[in-house]
Length: 137
Length: 139
Image 1 (cartoon, rainbow over the protein chains, first blue to last red):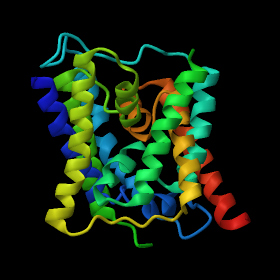
Image 2 (cartoon, rainbow over the protein chains, first blue to last red; image 1 turned 180 degrees about the vertical axis):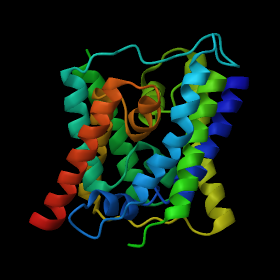
Image 3 (cartoon, rainbow over the protein chains, first blue to last red; image 1 turned 135 degrees about the vertical axis):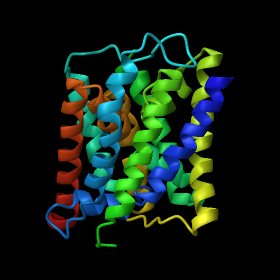
């Protein structure tokens, strides 16, 4: 229960971060990705702001034996750069470049009620399911 | 729109970093949105689904709350329906296959000094920029 409440609160903070930084807005994201146009560095500043917090604090947290509300850390186990990682990153990059939406902003943007965002999110969930079904049997 | 949002970007970024730090410190999880959503589709353990759902409800609700408090969400879509459909499929499949997205690899993975996340982040940034170059300046 405590973990559920914590996850809910963290989701709200995350959404405020996406909204304050305007990363919820595909026009901003595409402005960053458009290096040959009028380049908009905002996304770079968002990454810098986020990493300024996570880079120094993550190692401190991970030195503890366990998190505050759970029995153990649940971290990714894979360490090797393998073909699925590279192929997946390429496919994700193309989709991100086409729409300017990645998973976090897309979900947060559902709050706008935009039908286009709803279409994107349904397709995204379907894409996850297809990859799981056919690429990870 | 073309003016950089320096203050908003830095403060918003720090909030995203704070969210990632809190999720790791409290629940021991990585704040990767594609992974949180993907686990919701695949996980069969009941306790596993609940926190994921709570996070996503908080994410959507938080954006709604921001909209109520600070005016309409800044949202200018630049792609049409069919393009968004294809883009959504690619983003979903790619993040699943590649084990993460901008938040999981970019914000959390780099902070864990993960080589996989560094490689993934460089690749999806580069291919996204290339895609924008091709769609905006070539075709």
